[in-house]
Image (cartoon, rainbow, N blue to C red; front, side, top):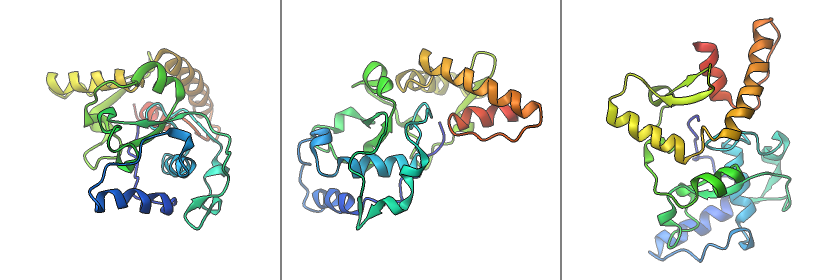
Length: 213
């Protein structure tokens, strides 16, 4: 789960609307998911900065051509029905009631992770991937034998416990994810060992950790 830079705003009409709430010190309009006029703009801007991957598992959620900047016109995403997989996630669910459209609290993630794993559980920002402090190599390791992410072994017990808890809550080692990641990476790593050029379009963090080990 690599760092995500959310400072690039292509959906500027949404961002201007969102910032007006803070300027007026007002609660956000009720969060009504896809019924909101800015829903697709939010989703596609997130997928753009996430490179089309689930923010947590790094499973591919859409084709790269949907993320081209030419798809935005006058601060809005032009295709109102893009073929994508996944759901908007409020990283901290406690903010949803009064700040349901807060850019800082949004990620786009795998549907199963959102509905079957993370849900409304309390979170720890230690693994919030858009913070300046987040550095995956300082926080996690990748066990190539089991294909599981684990806390960095040189961290103290308290830090390891926090990281392990968030690995669980974010579905990073969700069984179906591990199975798919293992199959994908073992094929790519085998190609690399035989000297073939390898293109990685999902699970890039795990791949990089494998080739460095």
